[in-house]
Image (cartoon, rainbow, N blue to C red; front, side, top):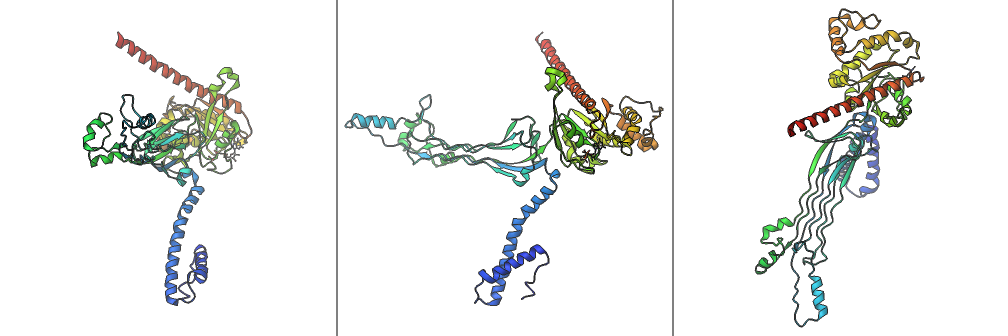
Length: 507
Ligand SMILES: Nc1nc2c(ncn2[C@@H]2O[C@H](COP(=O)(O)OP(=O)(O)OP(=O)(O)O)[C@@H](O)[C@H]2O)c(=O)[nH]1
């Protein structure tokens, strides 16, 4: 017997075992019980306890994995919501109101008062209804920044509506059942709500945007039960007269609906910072906004997008606020990011809403031009539309001699890459331009990259040492303004088109 209950291998299990043993010896088994029966009972007890413990442990272990790798979970989740059922109506009968001639004025008044039921504008009786079941609404809340909490709680149920609280007799005091409160679920700005593996329901991009995802059940109606000879007269007063037993289903409240939803967060930012790991994106964000991202000298310090708010440019006077913008610092991209390497694919979707991209390059790296091409290529492979966005290139770390010395040739090489085709015979003169074109395979790849527009500008900075930060800010704001202007022009063009087609149609 001792060998059978010898301590299990793992420490956790052994502590469990010894806890069981102490229970076994002290409380559960009476001293006089037969030994073999006691033991089998003990084993059964242990099994039940172990099952209970493992059932209790499982959520915490999944919680641990969430805490360890929040970047994998912060922007996508599946939740289930259920709206409340409607409350039930009631089956009522009319009270006896025989007012005899012998009754005095007081009794007559009382009887009249009693019969002053709630009536509609056309004089028909209003019978109480069961309360409406609670709706479920998802709304965009500026105070939220991730979907992580939905992994801990993924089910939301609204309450059912109240029943009509009646004792079976119609009277003027009867009220509708109480409507259940709406369950309002806050999500971060930029959350897209979809049916699980189904159609898109809403894109909650602005504060206050909301969507009703599950409508509460309607409350049941109340019915009047009448003897057959009185029904005809009563039906002139209300249609809710019960004719046969099958009508009773109308009294029951409608059930609520249950839906599984997929929530996907797409960060809302005007400017997206992209680049290889360690290029200095987080340092840049910290240098120009009040954001406090993690910064360290190793790749993938940034695990989740960081957001920062860029203040307006005071030199623009009243137009200062038009130069405000939100910046998103995304985790670094590496080659193969579009296929899921590194953290890339998880975050590339967060560029979707950006208007301008800032491509940060470590100018002191071994081959900054190749780094530049890698990131452009990853963007192209993920979504070619990303390469059509206006962007500026920031050559960072120019405080380091390695970067400073190669700055002119580096800038030139980068400005050569772009859709304003360089004649293929013209060999670039810079030290970097030769390297990727050494094989035909690479030639093809370069061509594809060079099919895309050139950067609006290339600025050399040191975000750590604060060198040329203002010049960079000027370029970012200029790019934003350019976007805004082109958007306005587009809107004007559309409006003009609409107007002209309207006048054509009129004439
Ligand atoms: N010398 C110098 N170092 C810099 C500069 N900017 C950033 N660094 C350093 O580069 C390292 C990486 O900076 P981060 O801002 O974390 O880089 P990141 O691009 O956000 O990196 P990931 O989080 O991996 O994407 C840190 O040690 C920074 O101090 C700069 O202008 N000059």
